[in-house]
Image 1 (cartoon, rainbow, N blue to C red):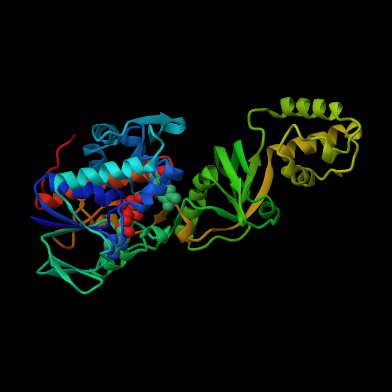
Image 2: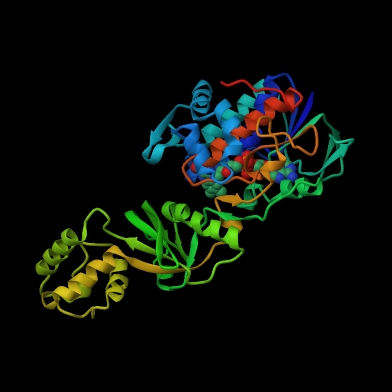
Length: 425
Ligand SMILES: Cc1cc2nc3c(=O)[nH]c(=O)nc-3n(C[C@H](O)[C@H](O)[C@H](O)COP(=O)(O)OP(=O)(O)OC[C@H]3O[C@@H](n4cnc5c(N)ncnc54)[C@H](O)[C@@H]3O)c2cc1C
């Protein structure tokens, strides 16, 4: 069985190892001069490769299409992946929020281990090979054609070309075009997990400032719809960082459902002191002001927040920043507390797809067998990873899905596809 894997990312590496270990003659075509470029930058170079949770929780994370992943995740879920990593010499650790990382904090260890695993199983790697076309005859795949026009005869093809975000890593969306040209439905490609541009200009002047242990609440049309606790960042266009990416998913979903969103519909509120309730924070502000009684308000709040934020919080409160600390009234203190617990920014738009962590949209999962990852349109054509219309929050969901669908596609392709059961590990 000759299996071509297109793309040596997370899904492609796992697919290649699985297919080769079943005895298939596997060639991995990768357009870059190296495998796993996106894996290397995953999790800020630490690679949050899965999460310590149940299959059900993962499925839920991929709603509304999560059920499609049930077989792939049941056959090879987080526990199996962690066991495999350990057997490949990559110890792991579980951090806050069930996030699983290599013990070494080095994404390269994950990439190197998977590459070596695939090579040991017998997969050959054709680097600097961009596949541009999949050819079929009588309802089944017969060859792939590379950018130089060379035709490679195959029995099966696994399209594991990733999404269309971070194109510098090689995932420029080729797979979507190949799938569409074969007649597969590719739903609209949009960003998921993406930084946000704000209407207000002032965050730009704070670019680079990160806030830890804050709570971010998303408003949709004035109603609170989500909130996240953790770290965020001011940028040259607005806001980014882990909790902004997580919260952006709701905006991306609205974009997907409605095509566009009105400017001003979404806003975020930053609670700079989520651990303190209003009376406790009010007492704390009162103490700080009393200790700085001779200073103007703008010079009396250093202990409460980063210096660069003070003028913006005071402006939000509506209090004159030159007011002496010892003349702040109860009402003004209450306004300051409200601003500290709800610094509000209107969202103008999301950043573009190229800057998203994952792509929302892709090959319609209804046209793919969930038990094998084989196309329902062509025998011998398989899909794995982000090319499928699946996306989930940050936290290890997306890589786990790439690994699980990759393994399932690899085993199925090696065994001849549709209808063959893949055993649980
Ligand atoms: C900055 C960043 C950080 C992330 N961090 C995490 C994280 O910590 N945890 C997590 O779960 N997810 C994370 N993700 C998401 C995760 O990395 C992706 O969902 C995952 O890599 C998808 O795997 P894939 O194999 O489908 O695609 P990719 O990993 O993108 O691999 C696709 C491969 O196909 C190759 N290719 C494309 N077209 C062709 C072609 N025509 N011919 C040959 N080769 C081709 C590409 O060069 C690439 O190597 C992160 C994403 C980004 C951008």
